[in-house]
Length: 243
Ligand SMILES: O=C(O)CCC(=O)C(=O)O
Ligand SMILES: [Fe+2]
Image 1 (cartoon, rainbow, N blue to C red):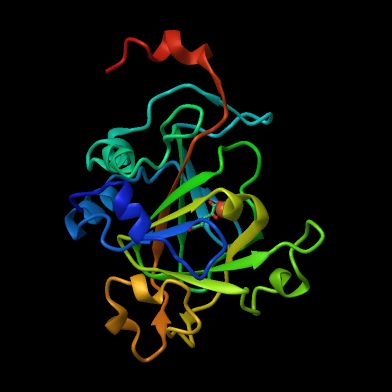
Image 2 (image 1 turned 90 degrees about the vertical axis):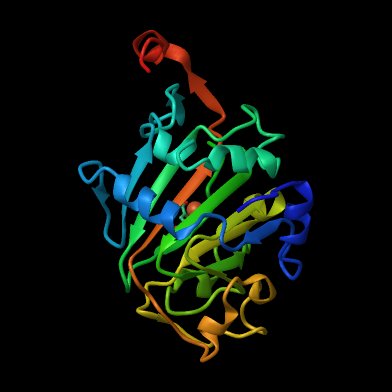
């Protein structure tokens, strides 16, 4: 995707949602998508009940500290994802002015993630690149600091839904990061998709693909980029000379 700028971001705002969500279809090309998928190391997965995940460059410590280390090129410069984030000015106001951490999540059909918030370890900006299949992100408003009853039941839909197409970028910032919960229902098919039920319908790259209101889940990989607030330089001596 070329000609990315702050103005691109404004036109990508999901206006029916609380501030701020932005959605950009076709953020990466099919070739870039294939190249990233092929470079995910097969031996770094942690299997959870309803998905598997790998953190890069490493997991945070128990006190949410990141040991300073560069992101691998396939998540940062080849393809040039970080330069694109910079053109959009996404992380301009976070402490390190750039993401320093990426969680790679993989979901098979029928898998998902319980409603949750991403919490205080990170600055309130998340950039999510979707690879493989499409999915719906459910968005819930917090009630008394907790998810609503329905939010805790994966079979019931959230208050809003965002359809994440393959190769898209979803950005969550500010109040949306702090005051809302998000989750992915563990279903095989997302149903009842239309302009009234999908918050970003008008921003989709290929709305025609969902004309029948249905999207069968396929294996989806998400890359969630964040800026971890606390970074320890203790590894610098070890990594400093490495290429
Ligand atoms: O896969 C996604 O798009 C969401 C992942 C997520 O919420 C997280 O890693 O905190
Ligand atoms: Fe999350």
